[in-house]
Amino acid sequence: MDIETAHTAVFGAGSWGTALAYSLAKAGHPVTLWARREDAAREIAATRRNAAYLPNAELPASLRVTSDLHEAASGASVWLFAVPSQSLRSVATQLADRATEPEAIVSVAKGIENGTLLTTSGVLREALPLAPEARVGVLYGPSHAEEVALGQPTSVVVSIPDLAIAEQVQALFMTPSLRVYTNTDLVGVEIAGSVKNVMALAAGMGDGMGLGDNAKAALVTRGLAEITSLGLAMGAAAHTFAGLAGLGDLVVTCFSKHSRNRGFGEMIGGGKSLEEAADAMTMVVEGMKTTASVRELASRYGIEMPITEAVARVIDGESAPYDEVCSLMTRDPKHEAAHLDGSAFA
Ligand SMILES: NC(=O)C1=CN([C@@H]2O[C@H](COP(=O)(O)OP(=O)(O)OC[C@H]3O[C@@H](n4cnc5c(N)ncnc54)[C@H](O)[C@@H]3O)[C@@H](O)[C@H]2O)C=CC1
Ligand SMILES: O=C(CO)COP(=O)(O)O
Image (cartoon, rainbow, N blue to C red; front, side, top):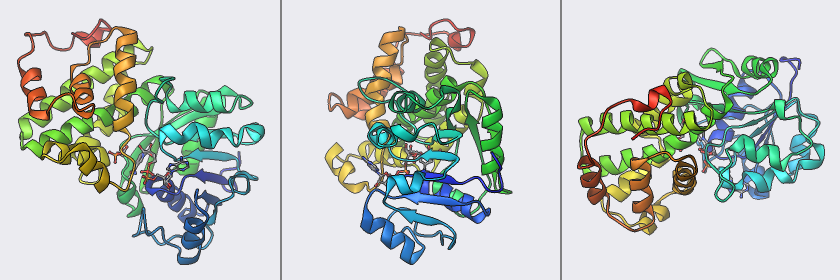
């Protein structure tokens, strides 16, 4: 891939797809942004702004926008999928016939598909069977779109099985304000980046209840223990959970005012009903669907995930956030960090 001329197709004109397309275009790379709705594509192209999802970025004239999926894919060396994880399969499937064309296929969606319990690269491998598996991966890490669009320093991690391709994607996305690392542990990066959304819902609930900083620190720490425990059982490397996709993304999502998962949880913790909170959201809250998948994965791998269980009960309407806090705090006494040697987290 010639980094200077490599053309990227970004599928999904929400906040993250728009921010990444903006970053690439501003760095001088050819980019086409695909929006699902024709009127949305026309408006973004005409105004050079995505008013609904990322109003503050003025999109360069070079950035092409279309609602034609095949037009967007045409001639692209990199396919970047930025649609919600539960919709990824339906979008990717439409491109199945031409999946040999791109040199890299990258998901930036964070979640675990309901039913199949697949991570997003797993969904892409199934939806695009003609694509060589070694070219399919993810770009994850602590990266709120709003800050990337402002050029605020951000570091992310790309994980693609073929390291040479990962390094090309790394070079493509690097700018002075967007630093990209590589990591060969795809399953670890994906589990870390997806399960942190469940913890961010819990963090937000804590914020809504006014639980305080001690509670948030404990949640992040014990949440990381749950994520690590599940990841290790699925074959991930322990170091990934201390990295950008692990601790990094968990911290930003549990603390940031930009986080949709944390913000949704805050509304629930503050007393709003699930319906009221959902009505107030215009953007995707991945943790809402991923929680059920994580719960099933925990059961499949025999991992105890008490915070995930608590979040699942709240979003299933089976219990109230404060009751779950009391239950978590009064569990049987435990040893810390049993998960780090690979043994089951208890
Ligand atoms: N916003 C952020 O800062 C970041 C988001 N992500 C991840 O990126 C993914 C996309 O998130 P955002 O852009 O933030 O979401 P968003 O809510 O801002 O936008 C979602 C976009 O997907 C489109 N969409 C929804 N359902 C669709 C479907 N069935 N088919 C095609 N398009 C559909 C919407 O029209 C919209 O353009 C999520 O998995 C999220 O976790 C990852 C890192 C940062
Ligand atoms: O993954 C993200 C930041 O890295 C986005 O998180 P939210 O979905 O909570 O906004």
